[in-house]
Length: 413
Image 1 (cartoon, rainbow, N blue to C red):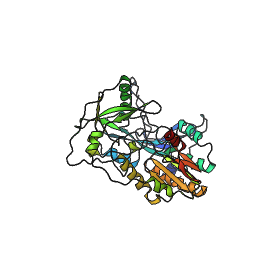
Image 2 (image 1 turned 135 degrees about the horizontal axis):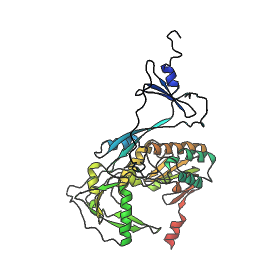
Image 3 (image 1 turned 180 degrees about the vertical axis):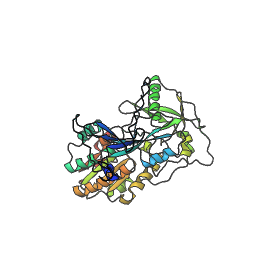
Image 4 (image 1 turned 180 degrees about the horizontal axis):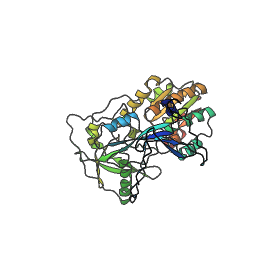
């Protein structure tokens, strides 16, 4: 060439071969080959500056593996408003897999940018949770296979596409995303701050309390507090003999102004189902824990026990007006399709259609809305594209409506 150089590398070449980078400390161009080898070429008019001998390595200290969870925009916006949160931005890029070492050097041409994602690893005063959230897992795959064996192929493909709506294990890495609806606690004018001495617990109940408090603290569903309010805790035994943690909010509920938001009438809902042949029932997971408590009202949810004083950041069970808040959230999400091909009663969603092709479109629409609004369902309690499903204690089918046989037997006995 006229300038006396063998070749000149320009910007287009650099953009095409992303496996090159400039090392300004040593004044060299670093070339990486698909064999895994690295070559350093000195810049014009310079010589490669040898790297100084690195200092002897310090004794390594074991560092626990961090928990990284993809956050939604609403959840991230909520974290920004917290005072005890530190943000770290991590860019994660897919690595190229090189062949075994080979004698020939060949630069790697990338036709497009390598796929990459950005994640926020968020540190708070509470320890992060080891959460299996939207990413697919082996447990998710096994559960999907178990519950989809008898489904039509098109239905199976659709459920696999929206597998993240049905995680086998559900918990947020922090408090839930900021949905458009929050739970507020409006008190009557003559209210009194209610606090009560903790109830006596048995040894098994105390052990279970400690375990469940740790589970609630880890994702930030509760946090320590010095609120003047304080309800006692107690346990109710479930059908499977496990213990359910309950908060006795009768004092708070007594002073809470009742929300008159209308709830659907089951008889009116059933009248809309005549003439349909395909039904899908979706049961949402932990509905109360998917709605946040307004920051100004969290102190009112305080509960006390022998292990400390805490408040909820998510809507606790047995709190008055909580069902109305969740029903409003569901109505806002499905407002334009309610009673067209979707019925919603709290955490029960029913999709109904005349044909399978039509039902697939309706089901996709509902799953897409759940995904966009960060709501999750329990796969084991869902039924897809069936001719007969259980909805609000009744069997709904293309043959009509009748009571659940189990409930009839229970009444007869």
